Amino acid sequence: MGIESIEKFSFRYLLLKLYGKFWHDYIFYKKVVYVNRDSVPWDQHLIFTPNHQNALMDALAIELSWSNQFVFVARSDIFKKKFIARLLYFLKILPVYRIRDGYDSLKKNEITFKKTLDIIRNKNGFVIMPEGNHAGFRRLRPLRKGFARIAFQAEEATGYSLDIKLIPVGISYSNYENFRSDLLVIFGEPVSVSEFYEDYKESPAVAYNKIKIVLSEKMKPLMIEIESDENYEVIDLLRGMYEKFGARHLGLKPNKLYEQFKTHKAIIKVLEQEERAESNDFRVLAEKTKTYIKNMAELKLNPTVFGKNAGNWFCFIFKTLLLILGFPFFIYGLINNGLPYFPTFRITRLFKDRQFHSSFKFGIPFFLTPVFYLLQTLLVFAVSGSIIWAGYYLISLPLSAIIAWKYSRLYLNTLIDFRIIRNRNRDQFKESKRLYQELLKQTDQLFKKNLNSE
Image (cartoon, rainbow, N blue to C red; front, top):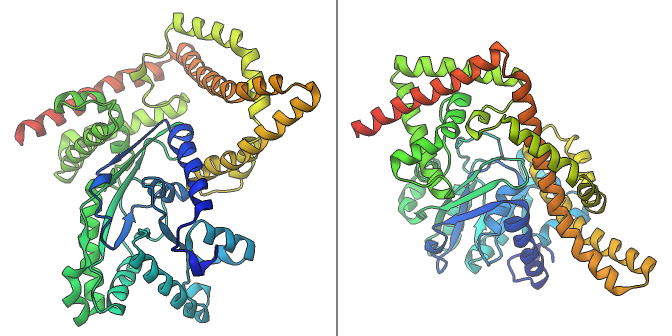
């Protein structure tokens, strides 16, 4: 598939997408929840505008949310090699050329625009990240005008007959990098480009700015938005620490991903209101939280560990016994499933931008696992001469992978127990435990105060 047919249905792409959705929703992520997906008006001409925090994973979150075949845009420099360009076109990605790519290259955007118009007319669902690039912060950055220029130029080229709808999308991750984390995708209410026709006809620049403001305000409620710079880390930690208590006050269930999201939004709202009011209570809370974060970093403990009932002697001994008994099963799983994953650890070390790490953690095993499973099973068949034993071996591969994963998590949890037991008599540990309780208590006071005032 080349650029000339990028908007057309591809059966090969469908097969890849079906496999990708299985790997994405059931293997890589522990929990994936889509909200308001069925409210998207697919009978209209749509441009999807999600927030951009996690490289390729943001695109996958949109692509795998629906059965249709979305088309995306990406910077042109990754299209330089013909093989890569063909692969990207197959994956339904269009190049966008910038001034930094050379003034002459901007002319190539005419081809991209023509295909964009075909895509919008064909109702594939066109996707553009309005922030322009990604950043690992839970906030919406200033929107660029690329999405607005595409929308208005498409309308202008068709005599303002498309009535394009911008679909704001909020993407939230429980962790940007970790395997088996949670993903929440929320679709918002459409923004009609037709509302800005007159502004565009008088001044495109004015129309761009107006629609950016409207879209930004539509996107922020759909994502975890921490506006504070000075106390970003403080608020980000407290929203997780206080989650269960906040949910209880709100009558929500923290184990439900969307209700957890609502709880976090409520906690962030309270804390940022207190920060903007420059309240002494928040100032004290922020200073204590920063001290707590520093102490826990020096103790090499996760700041949320005190909320997980870790460090129990009996549990530590029991987990250690399980580690000893389960070690042979772990080794079997590691040897037979490790090959598709080892390149991931090597490659991620080469990238300083950690937001690319999850993309490699997803992509490399996604392609290599079925290849290695097939080759290893054929090898067992060649050695044993038995298709039955080869079948048993193939069945054992995903099962042993699950066991190896569970074992690695058990090891990390046991290591946390050991660190707590080793440090529990240190003054710094005792101070941290006391601070943890104070942080919960003071956050609770602020939260209830604001709830009662509403």
